[in-house]
Image (cartoon, rainbow, N blue to C red; front, side, top):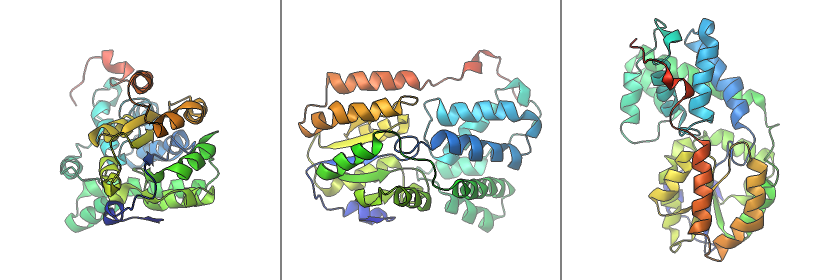
Length: 300
């Protein structure tokens, strides 16, 4: 068992005939709403000086991070989308929303952008904009750490992970910083179940899955379990199957995994109508366009 390096994932030996990648925040742990609403969003308001516009900023950030197709995405990609949507809000006229040009350039390389990458680039270039983004990200990390590890796994998730680990190589596939992942999985007695824990620093979820599955698993023998569209896209990009943990129905989703999906996957009877029905229900939960899109778009 190990963590961190991309080469570790590439050299992952196949101990079982199947591989299961599992997202963490909002999928295994009931943490996503708490972290976003108590850490990410209030600090966004505070760092960028939008206290008088807090309700609009929070509504926009919640849509991006919790209730849309971008749920679960890299925090910096989500920040860019949040700022873009804020520009559409008439209430934000004159708020001085940064264009995040330098952050966009970093994201445009296709690499997974981490806090360390942003902070080091801000220090090297003296960029005020990246410095502000890095300050927000640093304070988010501190606030998340201060929450402690009191947020438990969803009901049935522990049993499901134990079942997975008994028959498959289990890799944590996440865009959460690895330090936080390791701390949470250890605190709740789950760390020993994971063959590898891969977070923000080790690349994108697609890269995690591609490297981990290079160990020699056959067609239909890799499954991704996640709660965000990015998890589905990562699975499809490497030819893996996908099982959704439906936002708002997490306990029922894990129960169904135990009752039906796990055995189907092991028996190679997962692909087809069963998986297609799951995907339809999942996509219906995560719209692309925000409810305020009916408003005229404002040019700020």
